[in-house]
Image 1 (cartoon, rainbow, N blue to C red):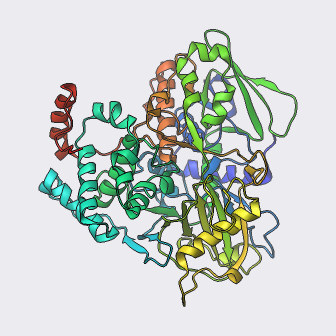
Image 2 (image 1 turned 120 degrees about the horizontal axis):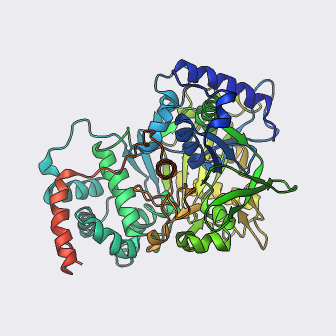
Amino acid sequence: MSRSRRQFLSAIGGVGGALALGVGVPGPADAASRTRVAVLGGGVSGLSAAQELAERGYAVTVYEYYTALGGKARSMDVPGTGGAGRKPLPGEHGFRFFPGFYRNLPDTMRRIPFAGNEDGVHGNLRNGTEALLARNAGRPALRLPFHTVTAPPDPSELAPEGLLQIIAGLLDTTLHLPATEVAYFANRLLVHLTSCDQRREEQWEKVAWWDFIRAAEMSSDYQRLLGVGLTRNLVATKAEQASTRTVARTVVEAFLLNGLLGRGVDGEPDRVLNAPTSEAWIDPWVAHLSSLGVVFELGTEVQEVLYDGSRITGVRVAPSQGGAPRTVTADHYLSALPVEHARGTWGARLRAAEPQLARCDALHTDWMVGVQFYLREPVRIVHGHADYVDSPWSLTTINQAQFWDVRDFSADYGDGTVTDCFSVCVSEWNRPGILFGRTAKECTRDEVVQETWAQCKDALNRPGRTVLDDANMHSWFMDPAVTGLGGPTPANREQLLVHPAGTLYNRPAAATAIPNFFLAGDYVRTDVDLATMEGANESARRAVNALLDADGSSAERCRIWTLYRAPELEPLKRVDELRYQLGLPNTFDLG
């Protein structure tokens, strides 16, 4: 597919940025002699792999289904909404945020040139300074400040007694739960924090978070705040099913505890971009990759990875909107498709040769889709994200314009009357709502929008205080990847991997038994172990390292950051390792 004039001009700008950084731009003569890599998929994992490979001299071609790059992370124009020199309103599959514990992805972002930023597109991140837990039925909202500790904690504070005090104090101050429930939850976190890796993988991975924290025996607030609020609302997986290892290790330990303590982090706990995602990140990234010689074939569907019994010999592709298939070839093949699409490209012979591919059939995906409401007047709810913990559809929101300090929303977008984008993520699509009494999948597109707006109003509006006013809504947008709503076959082409207990064992490694075939994507087993942009980026680094090994390359391997491990807890983990091998519970496990 030919590239548009805009893509060409972006590439020219990327060449200038690459030269300014002293990066060599491969010439036409070099391309024929370089080792060729076909990257299947142009989302975060595919673009991350392309960058690492291109920087090491490989000739990379990226095959992408859509006519735009970035996958679920990209923003997109709302058709027919621009005017008088303004850009169309910015839409998205769902809002992006960059927790402080992300370290692999921020490193990549620093290496993407952006005019005026010494640290590349990383300089476009802005801190969310607080979060809001919005409650319905007239209950007061809980406002949580988000600032990392400026001074490192005293090691004694991270001893078991100190940790219990920190966790219990945080819960008691912010969530106002009964003291007995606070004490029990703090103890459960201490059990996991002091559990050895073997116990985490072999015991807690098999236990659902709901059962680990004994939510069924606790108050409704405990269930909503510490069960649903930490699972469905944040990572689109059900507390009754979510793996304890994933929730406790990544969401609680890395994001909340280490994030707030400022240990092993890249920045503040909650960060967002200062403009629509494609403008602030994806477009500069594509331009930079083009400057490194990466070729993009857009509007191209990957149909099958072809295997001859020993190696991958090619990939059958076809135009996304229909057309005759063809076979493309390379020396190495790196599949960076989402798992729900990737596994459909693996034939029976390939699956038989690499059993971990077949195990991917047991991995689960679910819906986490956004609705953007465009407002005539700005509404300030919180300087960060709001979590609607009582909403049946598990909503989270952010008012984006407050962070877009390099944009004037009404002057830059739409018809000149829109001042903000109120972006909502809908994480639960299978429970009845409050307006129509139907699940989101059973509602039409318009009904989903009405129901989502109604649930937000239910949590934010109070007698005498109207935060969301119907008259203030200008228009709305939902990703066209969601189709068939209200009908017999609702579909979402852009789903999210979820983490039911026990599914860690079905996640494949980046390297496969096929010597020229590698996997990247947030379903690939990584240290971060969460369906995130960070997981996608880490998996790409692992896939590139595996490819370099297979190719016998002398190039420097990609650096991989792993989640921070508090040194004060390591002795307790070693004790627990011995206890686990003896069949004993964790020292602090009171049942």
